[in-house]
Length: 398
Image (cartoon, rainbow, N blue to C red):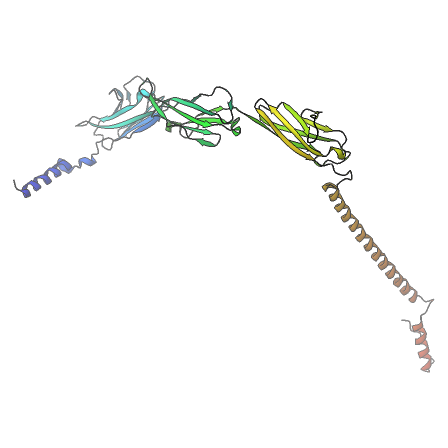
């Protein structure tokens, strides 16, 4: 057979495969049901939905992975109260399975009994929820700069979960998660370890192991282990009052920190041989300060983890009080009030002068307007009237 004939035959075969008799497109068969794969968390509910366009007067059917019929149309075939009918029409059959178990995982089949029988598969994946992790390896208090190893384990996850570590808000880089299949053959146990060196800042810190798994849907599933770190003490000296003056009472507080907290405090003064006695717990008391108390004082705080010595230089100031910020504030307020009072007094003086002046002017005008006391202007007018020679004498009052 020549090459042209072979090519023609191949085209005819492709045409025959793609087209059914009568012109029906097999890739778009309206009698073919369709469904979708589903994922469900163990203990949850899954809905299986099967649809078809042309049912050809036949009913849809759901079967489980063991090929047991669950529903045929509206009729229940398997006595399992977890399986319920959701919707049944000639074009759709939907069922639900509640309280899903790991054993329910597998391929479910939707069938329609046409000629030929047509089926669609739905793969149901059941996720195993990991158990709360367990931390082991911490037995007792740790000493500063010790190294410790903690282990974490969680079982029941499917697929296998991942473990992460953190100390407070800081991520710890542990070893890769180890995976081991559980005896049921379906779930997994995961484990991880982390090793780190502790410092005094780690005292009271929480070492957290967390499980990451898609079944948790972002929910936190973790376990915390609080650790205790023993470390050498520190101390500082705090004066009370902070600015001691001659004649005052003074307490020097030796404030110790550590784990365990220092229980013993010893006071010394440079140049003084015997240790000083405390008067109040860890404080050194001066009932009445004088100049001879000036000098450098040392406090040694001791615990079973070691000792620490703090220093403080005492300078006894003169007894004259140093203006405090509060007295300065009151002085400023007093100056402002005195200035305001001064301004008010000046205002009252000017107002008094003004009233006295205008009151005298008012009285003068009253005297000029009375008939008993004609003023000089009236006399001048009368004199002018007499010089005009007229017998007609008139008085004009202005």
